[in-house]
Length: 216
Image (cartoon, rainbow, N blue to C red; front, side, top):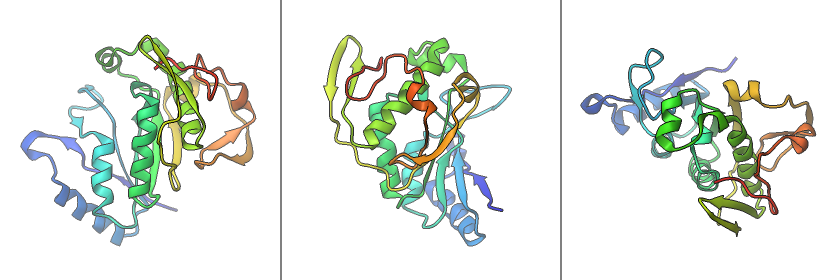
C-alpha cells in the first residue's frame, strides 16, 4: 500500500504557509516514505465545500520540486477546461522535467459554475472542452502539429513544447461520467497516459491533431 498527503496550500493571507515551511513538511513526508503530495485547484471560494481558496498549483508545484527529492507532486484535481491546452501542455511538461519526472496530473471537469463565468468559459461546454483539451495535450506532448482557434484567429502551429519525462494522468469528477466509456487495450501513449481503441472514435467537438481545430 502507498500513501499520499495533501499539500498545505491554503491561501490565508499572512498565515499562508511559506515555501520553507511546505518544503520542510514534504521532506519529512519523504523521510516517512510517503509516495505523493497533491494540491487542489480552485479560483474562488466554494462554500460549503471549502471555506478558503488555494495557491495556484503549477507555480507552487514547480517551486516545491526544487526543495524535494523523491516525493511525487500532483493535482487533486486540476480543472482542465478552464485552461488553454497549448499553454498548459508546455507548463506541465516544464514542471515534469524540472521535477525529474515526479509529476502526477489529476484532471477534472470542474463543478463551480461561477469559476467558469469568471473565465468566460461556458459551463455547459466543460465536458466537451475537457475531451478536446486532453486530445490536444496528448498530441503536443507527442510532438504532433496542432491547429487551434484563438478568438476569431485560426492558426496552425508546431509549438516548442518539451515532452514530459514520466507524467501520470488521472481523470476525476463528473467528466468521467459525461465521457464515453473506454476499454483499455494495454497500449500506452508517449506521455504514459493510458490509450484505448475507443478514444479514437471519441467525440472531440472541434479539436483535432494536425488537421482539426479546437475552439481555443
